[in-house]
Image (cartoon, rainbow, N blue to C red; front, side):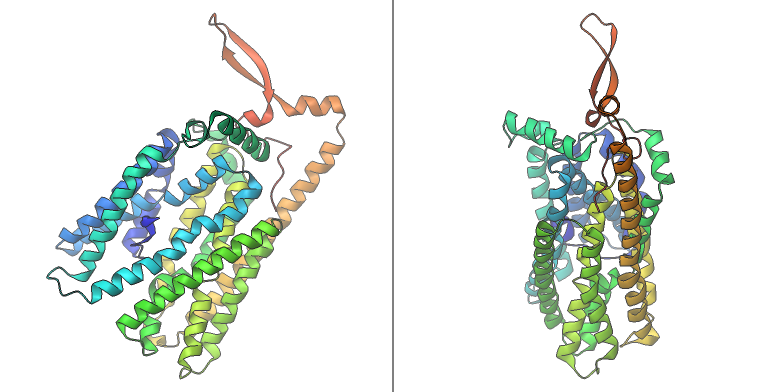
Length: 438
């Protein structure tokens, strides 16, 4: 997505990102979903273009706040979309394909920047960059407005039979509603009481404590190694290409081994640990080895983030609970991205031993440990539910599998009828037949 083309980790942007989480998720639930996504992309493009006319620092601060607000719920919106159209098994290995757009963005941005650095226009290269990316975003928003579906029932690219089949298979997989316009306070409270929600938020924070490496420090370290500005741009493109390959490898790994999500998350932190150790241990004169370790450390742990983000949603049921858990996850992400630049202390340059050690311990060792704790808790819940379900008689099971809804008949009278539990907007805690993906 072009939303990622101009992404920079500025504190002002992240403040806007945090502040807009709750109102953004609330608006996403209440407004037509597809039109809301189109509006976000349009706002992003317009704000990028406005950067070109900003003449003061205060104006740039306001624009960066607005930019963070416009981006704040784009990722959760993509997660909700995947959850609407694909079952939980498919969601796991489709996550990396979605994030190919993020991994590929530095490639596109790097080559655009490389070309603009050769320009001799009276317009500054960074302004030309904003014009290009902002213009592409606005053009994309027009396509999104007309083509992006709010839910499978409105997907014009599917036949009627395909829409019904899509809705049915997602219901059977998630045991929850696809879309729900009502914000339910009970689900909100349950999300806050559920320790799994806080563990996902914590691992988002710990992992993203290393995110400034990719979006802030990588170019500075590359230049410190003796690579000039044009060369560092090409190194960024190479890193993006490597990131694309990592995403593809992660997708195929999840396709063939869909279980043990925590171990998938652990696996993709191991290369980052190796790269971090290399950055601490290798002699500074070994430029090629240092660059290889830098790319290895900065472009592999992203798969762990992707896996955890998808797992956050797929392990919850109830539309409000899913959105609330997404908010918590993204708040952890944002706070970490505000804190992560602080571990790069200028006096430690160019080796930054403290930063590398903290990332190895907190981000790439600590995060998988949290994911393993989540797996342990969810596995225990599944075992308890399986034992309970096996103890039911066929008649008791039928009673629990059905729910009751109230609706008006043709005469206007209130009637009650039984429906499958998957048709109700129940949370994973309310639905005893919900099986947690692990």
